[in-house]
Image (cartoon, rainbow, N blue to C red):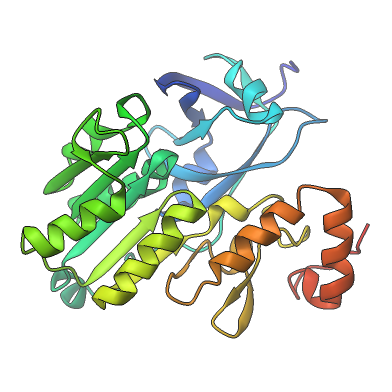
Length: 300
């Protein structure tokens, strides 16, 4: 690894099986970032660009916290890096900050907000819950996973949220069921009333949360970071249909009104994008709208 790489790993922690937390020394990013935004990590000159949502930041220490799951070749390689080593690139902040940050404070104080975190989605939920706590607002939070071993950031979240509800599909810890089952229990059985749900996690989870909250009449924001690949609008991977408009998660988001997101299209597109044949079909079908309009790029 080249000694000139400056984005040093100050801390590395294993949160769960194949899920890691790292504090990266990146003063410029730490100074400018907000909850909801993301960074692009590149390990070395030949490395893949990896978009990761910001989990936390310390402006004074100049560090930015990322959380990732080692499931592909690049993230598995990243998991082999240790404290003291460094990345070649750590670009950001990118994307738009959470809409909560710029919301009228009086209006924000009137909202009952529920955060719903699925799996690694707890990482991008965390900085928003932290920001709310630091600014004097109370929120509830659901953390869901397939089993107890995959629940992350529980203790940290309990320091910030008024109520933290843990749910596991297999019932090995907390409430037995998925996050939707937990939402139904809170609203229907415990008399909870929410004005806003912010759901971040796997695509299928966010889809079904939005179907439920639409029935319940609760505005819902989702983060479409799972579809991001390049992070600049160039590759076309994160092209979305939001209502009747074409948007790109990396440039226009990553957060959107969940009730307007065409999840079925997004999930099908993500599957197609994995093969060269699929990418060719998408480029041919979408033409100039395959890329973000502000991106000066070709189909190569």
